[in-house]
Image (tube, rainbow, N blue to C red):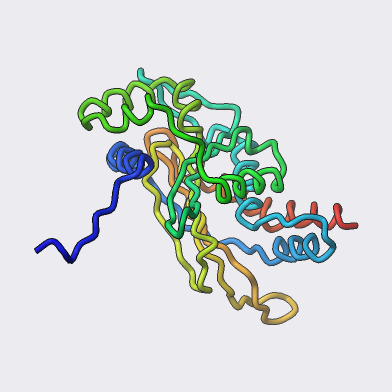
Length: 263
């Protein structure tokens, strides 16, 4: 009677994801669904490709912009310690689940991009491509043993680790970022993450949108982004100021850097 079903083994990352959702689902997150104009940003990327400068992905540039926006005011990623006190990491370490292909099967693997606010988009792009092409580093026996423990045991370890900022940063980074930008079907799509972190960002799809401007009606390239923060440590005003910084970076500052670099 079970011949209609195929057996599929649960990977270590599947177990890690399930643990993260269990820990994150009880956090009082608030969410902001944002749409930003990346028309000029895409023009800059096309110039780089056309002139043979480099092949930086749009995902890497957006991750860089998100990290820089956080780095300008790192309080947006502050966390609570085990005593309920606030701690603010001064570095931006991005926890990024990345998909790679192995013999026709797709798997997810966690990647932590250290000091993402200080490194260039093409450096982030190399890190993303390396994992996507070569797969994850082999897991240790200690990791495999821990992830196979019963949940009621793992839960207490997670609570201790997440309550110690130094350990939390070392193993989970300071901010969660996920993306489905590569699966865009020219439809506006947002996602709502459930991260272990006090701040999570979901990069949705790109789409065309007709807007009215001084010169008439234009078709613009837009990106959908969801910003989620733990309401125990952040509020709507903090989110709004972060989005304002991100908007300036994506729509003004980074496109101008392309113009300068390509003279």
